[in-house]
Length: 97
Image 1 (cartoon, rainbow, N blue to C red):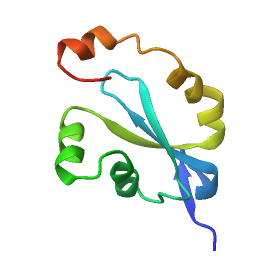
Image 2 (image 1 turned 180 degrees about the horizontal axis):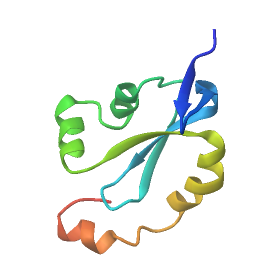
Image 3 (image 1 turned 60 degrees about the vertical axis):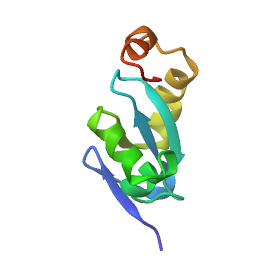
Image 4 (image 1 turned 30 degrees about the vertical axis):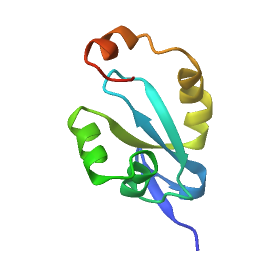
């Protein structure tokens, strides 16, 4: 059985997708493979095991996005390797980026 997801109006196999965790500043700060975490809730739990942590991060503007692996490879993976240009802003709020 193959699970499908709709991304930007196109059906793609979930095996070809990743969940990306974005910080409020706009930096990608984490990724999990969607075939192991098929739902957004499961992806959140991979990063933040407790409900309190998840809700806190979501209130602060962290978000999860399902992307194709091709987009991850071509656009997002390099962003995660780069230093966050917003670090001073995050530090001022008392948060890690």
